[in-house]
Length: 252
Ligand code: IPE
Ligand code: IPE
Ligand code: MG
Figure 1 (cartoon, rainbow, N blue to C red):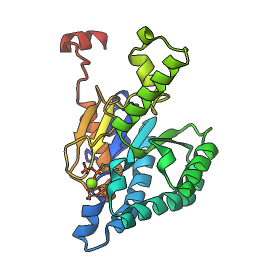
Figure 2 (cartoon, protein in one colour; figure 1 turned 45 degrees about the vertical axis):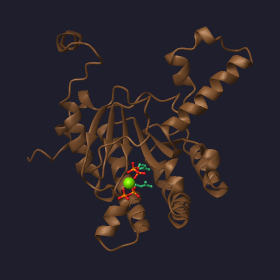
Figure 3 (cartoon, protein in one colour; figure 1 turned 30 degrees about the horizontal axis):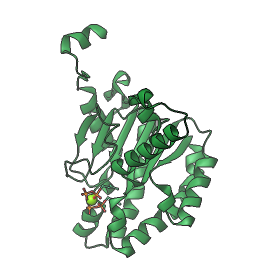
Figure 4 (tube, rainbow, N blue to C red; figure 1 turned 90 degrees about the horizontal axis):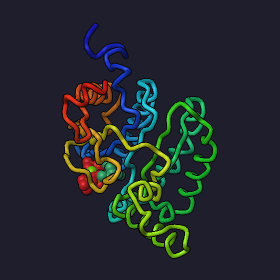
């Protein structure tokens, strides 16, 4: 059997519980083919479906995907509108399969900025899928880490002003609990597709100790095999969390 056949290639002991992905390269994928950028986004939906299925099959519990950043609001209006429409149509067409496959949908980001129709579709989908248990797909929409942290600080200050929190009790846990990601574990593995090696304002606090994996594959070409490659790389890393290699080996 070739090294890329069969699920046993990825050792279950080393499966990351939470994988975060920066789904990048849709525009370049389309441009390479002489297609409009929005065709790249449309094909990106297929890649997400395939990647989500594979992640669930490999035993990943949480998948957080960067679907639209705060900064992406600054793109040409036609592209922003097309992405918002794609969000609505994707939720509509995918929800029956999400139900069948046990996918729970959640979202992070400043959802108030989404057009009303997109926000409502998203909220309905979150409600409908809330008891699903196979995997949680977290959509980062109108999301940036600095915006999330700024909103968290506002929440903390308001708790202090209402007298429910003392300034001396503010610690890392308090801050974590005020983030959009409060109910999720931190990502173990962060994947960026599309060849760029930067974080682009994504989960800055949460990826403090995540392993990073950069792939040159454009997002529409990503799927099960590309994910397996990232998980294999992850399995070969030693996460030390500031300790020495010897300490880590004693813990195992
Ligand atoms: C990622 O692909 C999708 C979004 C940011 C919405 P891009 O649209 O950034 O594709 P490139 O980077 O221009 O190729
Ligand atoms: C990051 O990709 C945001 C998403 C994938 C949604 P961008 O394409 O917006 O990031 P930059 O501009 O290359 O940093
Ligand atoms: Mg990009």
